[in-house]
Length: 167
Image 1: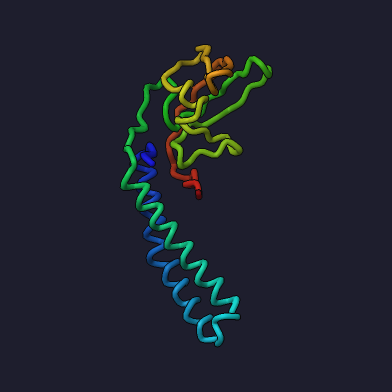
Image 2: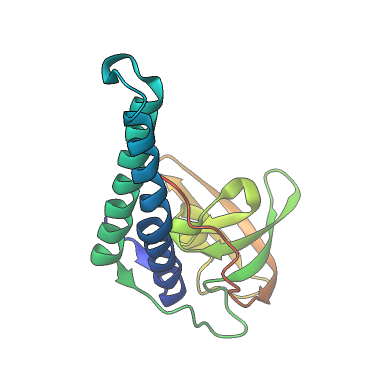
């Protein structure tokens, strides 16, 4: 896996693990017990659904624990005038003659539909370390790339509201 995570990401993941272990696990076990009490398990839909929910929760816990164990912790510090992690960047796409605004985040928070792009994505990688006014080449694959111009950089504080993505 080796996801790049900040200390804040790890903290949010640990909070989710704790919640799932202390709250969700307890509720799931109770739901299985209650459904089991309803009789014949071979035709008991509630029992099978409760077991599935319990197993899904346990899988999520294992996934998150493995993510933390294999993570590479990175700093979210950057220079004020350079694009860095958690910066909001206004980018001009020359091919489309459009300006888009993105916030650069770690992979686990990436959600391009909400303007959150990963620093490991082609655009995120290309923007990192550049300054306002820089023209940047974004290489998508060996056969295709495009040019963008950085219009503005806003240093934003990571308030932790970006959700950790579910896989």
